[in-house]
Length: 315
Image (spheres, helix red, strand yellow):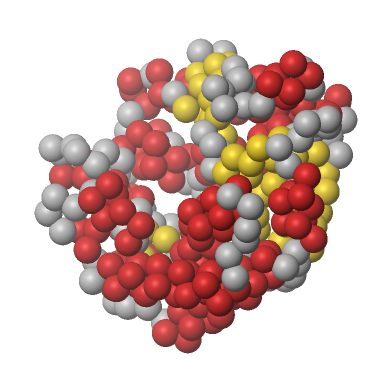
């Protein structure tokens, strides 16, 4: 079983949603229901799509250019993002993820599926235009941010979107930090990009888990020698949330106690999740509790299969 912050969060909010996403979804399944659940898993809201576009542009354009020593211009970046957004909108509006033989690999960066196309017969164009404006604003804010300038000037190694995996209690803990920044003479910096407006969510747990996993990870071949030899602890790391629409940097300081709490959280939630995977009699949606938050159901990508399952329950 693979454990991650997002998987544990889903499990805690709605065991049934976790069941569909982690147990039922299978892209090459012969069973129609499993295939359908996989296709539903691909659906995203306009809000989530907006964030994905920003992440992709940072990962595939801005950071590689920065590594080579020069940031792209704002105009060039916006042009790249706009073209990507239009290709994904075209793909998603036509429900191309449902085409026979279509896969994420085949679709590439164009691959996209929208919740509103599946459940509401189309996208709200006003929301789409607002999302486009926020994509441009987020990228423009990042390009002129002091944080990016500091990283460009002082980093010895920059690694975006790296999958990190460590073993824990017979399951694997996985994480994928937006950016890991290594320095020659100080602990690394972990950065998480956030594209939201008017929210005061505290992301210390998510960032703390990134730090915990990085500290426990067997060094990758491209990790700097200075970092490997220094043998830093997770609470030594700098962890930062950058709010792209506001241009705000929020730094978190992790204590030894925080790291112990994070370790306990991983093991306690992971053990419960693993028990569901191990017990064959629980491979039935009716054994999984539905959410206590009614609002989640209205925006859940698995709504249609979950509702059908409810109607098949014998009373």
